[in-house]
Length: 216
Image (tube, rainbow, N blue to C red):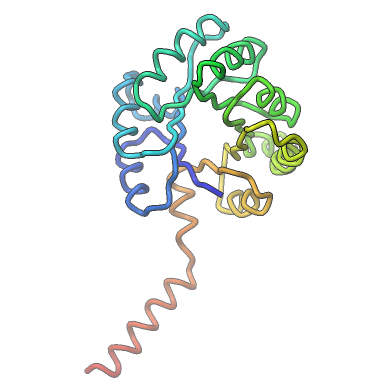
C-alpha cells in the first residue's frame, strides 16, 4: 500500500517527505482554506517541487465544460499533477474527456462501490472512497473499499487504483492495508500517530538506561 499525505501544509509535506515513505499528496479546497490562502497554483507548484509522485488538485467548477477547462489549466502546473473531480454526472463526462487526453483524474467523494465503478469506467486513474465520512453515517467505509477492490479485480482492463480517503486514525490505515487497497491518503497527524507506540518509547529508555549502567 502506498501512503499519500492529505494536506496543503508545505512544512508538514517537507517533514513527511524526509521520512522517505510518502508517495504522493492529495489536496482540496478545504485543506487549502486551512492554510489561509486561495493561491492554489503557487501552493501546488511548491508541493510538486517536494513530491515527485502524484499531487491531486481539485476542480471548483460544477459543470462538465468548466471542469474540463479548469482541469487542462491545472494539469499544466506540473507534470505530476492529477485532477480531483467529484463523482457526478458532469464529473463523469469530464473524466471521460480528460482521460482520453492522458490527464489523470482522481474521482473523489465516492461513497459506494457503484460510484467507484462508474469512475473507473469513465477512465479515472484513481477513485477515492471516503471511509471516515461513511463511518460517521453508521456505514462500514472499509467494506466499501473492499467491495470496490473485489469488483475492479474482476475487470483487469479497468486500470484504476483505489484510494482509501477520509482516514481518521491509525486503525483505518491498518484496515486499509488489510484490504489490499492501493493507496491510503492520510492527514499528517495520523501519519505521526502511526509512527508512535508507547512500548517503543519504553524500550528506547530501557536500552539507554542499560547502556549507561555499564558504560560508567
